[in-house]
Length: 460
Image (cartoon, rainbow, N blue to C red; front, side):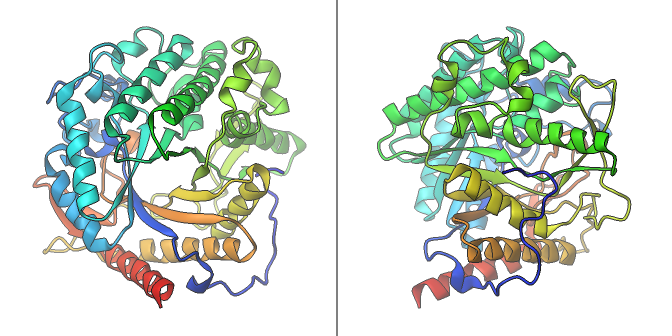
């Protein structure tokens, strides 16, 4: 099985309706710590790699930083109230490693842990299940200075981070993910230089891939030991890797992109092997017993999906491919990402066949450059069209037998979107960054109605 440019099913499709969704299907929203929390220098938080990266000239659009972001650290109660109004059953958020362990290891920061204690209690009081992701890209800067993910010791430091979170939140939180999109932060950080630590080094890149995988396996064991009734997984971006051209070289480039983007983490974590095309490249970092330590039983697979990704041949690339934009005639979202719900449906079917695990769609959404009216309202019809089409594609996958058990919109709030800063808005709730006022968009109302319709069918 592969995610490379092979449509699995052709029209016509079977009729898929909300009747086909499980009665206990989970509807949720997702965020991440650095993108929304702010309070970067409060409550004993240490620096993350993104704090320093944002201050390097030219790295982030408009010189934006996550220093304040959505000020969720102070406004979480209001954000939980918004989620309750939406009717979501779950909230996926990440733990800021430098907030709870300012040096990345050693003495915990009680003020940081207490923030997550309060957030979890607030969610449970609102009837919303907390889904905790242990890592969404914000490595403590102190650990980066010790080598970051290129240092094998980082896997053990991550296991200690997991142990602290599990011991303090595991009495109330049962859903844990180890990593969010590890292929993105390793490829962009260690191969392309687009994200911190902004290097392009083959040995460091492959070491980082392997050490993140090892950290995942070690953390799964820790979570099993510390959390009674834990439901564990990891979150992978899965998007068809397509050649931008029709040459054999472009097709070979797409196959290599597929290995790094879709399979370098999912395959060893869930199948116990690296993809054949990159296995020899991983050998320098891999020691005896490592694959067994990585390949630990998990309960579900988290999939983040937005659009296909494209590769072109580049003889100078050590990876065997170069990143490419989608073809000029592709249908695109307002920020230029390709819209292809058929690709989403096929990804769900392929992943279900390949890994044999229940699937939760942990991110899906549409970015835009939006303007509000005088009242702060946003009539985001394009986002509604996108969400509607992609949820329909999910329903088609379910109709064909995919075991999909939940869907989380990215994102609850407009937020810091990494290199794009605050210029791209993905939220179904608008944030006025000058005042921090929250205003649900038309898409929030649409999503709430969709959740309510499913709940009504499930209880009828």
